[in-house]
Picture 1 (tube, rainbow, N blue to C red):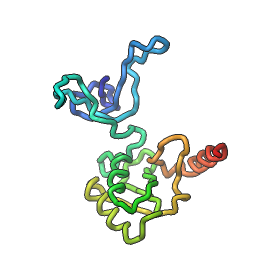
Picture 2: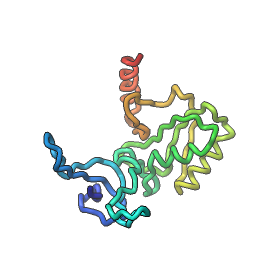
Picture 3: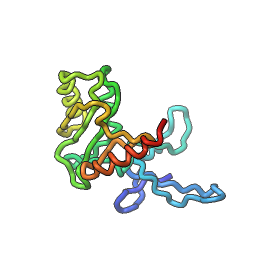
Picture 4: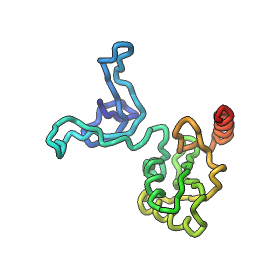
Length: 177
């Protein structure tokens, strides 16, 4: 396992966040040689509390294709979900939007309002801004108005492709029983 800079491909030192690259030579049918996963992580080379000295991953934070850049800062959908999930009345369901590849001045979050009231929105918005350190735009909608892909976790969406997403999800739901 290696962690590399996604733009240059150069190997990053332990503890620095980048893209996970895997080499697996023991697969007989198809060995993986420097396979770029798109996953965001860092390597931890400090000894484990249990005494082992193996290199470990610090955990997958997200995927590079799903990061909106907001005010020059990366924001992960998992961070947004963790913050909103602290509210006991939150029943689940979010979309995080970006505008193509352009950096955004604020994070744009749409939340399913089931279980939430309009009075909860300011507290959630403040929690997002305080923890992410970026301005937030928060919209509560009915859960059926969220864009949900039935066969994959796709929470960060591009506003320029909304019609495509709606057609794609409608086609995927046709085959569901």
